[in-house]
Image 1: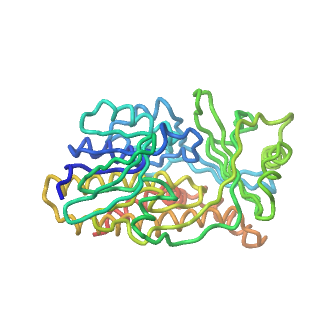
Image 2: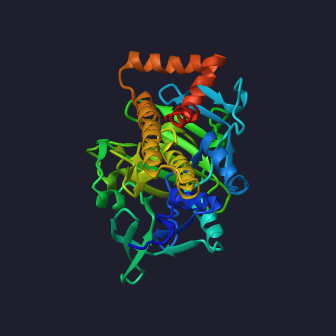
Image 3: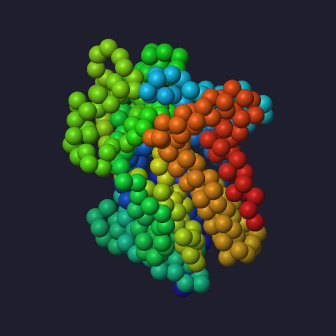
Length: 407
C-alpha cells in the first residue's frame, strides 16, 4: 500500500507531545492524535529528574519549564510516628553533581500544552485533538489507522510507523495484543490537592517529602499549580475495605493531613481523587511497525515520581532511533528491538524495582525491620558516598545510564 512518510502518534500527553517535538526537530513528519480536546489538567505527574531535565534542555523546553515549574534540589524522608526528619538529600551537595542538580516540579499538562503550542505552528505536524483511534492494520510498507473525528465519523490515516502513547489503558497495546505483565496493588491511592503552604510548618518540610508509617505513609510535594501561586499534593494509601466515599469525606481527608502535619485550623482542600495503582510492563515495546511508549508500555506506583520521566526517556530514545531509520537507512528491526531492550531494562531494573522498594520502605510494619531501614536512610544522608549513591538511584541517574548502555 502507499503510505504517508510520517509517524502516527496516538496520545498527546507529555510523552506523545515530546515524541512529536523530538521527531520534528529531527526532520520527521508526524500526525499527533488525541482523544481529548485538550490536555487534562487533573494530572498526577509533576516531577522531572536530572536525566529528563537534560532532555528538556536539548529540546528547547527547559526555559519554559523553569518559568512554569519549581526547582527542588532537596528531598526529605520523615518518620510520622516520631515526627522526626530522618534523612535530607541535596543534589547540589553531591561530590559530582549532574549538570542540573535539582528536580523540576513541572506538571504534565503544562509540558503537554507548552509542546502542543509549538507544534501547532509546524507544517510538518497534523494535529488532531478530539480524535479517537478505532483500529489499525499494518503491512511491510506501513500502518493504516482508522480514527474517529469529534463527531465519531471514521477517517483513515497512514504512516510508516504507529506509536501508542495513549496511557495505561492503551488502545494501541490492546489492539496489538501485547501482554501487560505485572500486578495491581490491593490498596487504592488517595490524592489530595491543597493550597496550604506546608513550608510554614518548619524546616523539616521541603518541596519533596516522604513520610514513613506502617500502612499509613504519605508523599507530599509542591508544584506551582494553575495560577503559579503554589499547590501541594499529598498521596497516600487507602485500605481496601474503606469505601471511596468514606476515604474522600471532608472529615477523613482533614484527619489524614493532620496525622502527618498537625496544624491549627482546617486545611484548604482543592481536590481529592482515588485511583488504582499498577506495576506493569509490556511484554514488548515494538511489534512490527507498532511501538509503545510511556504508560502504554509501563506503569508504576508514584512513590519517587518516576513514571512520567520514564515515558519522556522512551520518547527521546525512540525519536533518535526513528530518525536514524529515516535518514541513515539504519536497520529498522534491529534498532526497534534495541529500543525495547533498553527501555524494558530501564523499567524492570530501574523504575519498577525502585518504586516498589520506595513504597515498601515507607509502609514497613515490622518494628525492627522498619527501624533498620530508617537507620539506613540516616546513614546514607550523613555519609557523602552513600548520600550520592542514594540520589543517583532515587533520581534515575544510574538506571538511565545503565539502560542507555544496552546494545
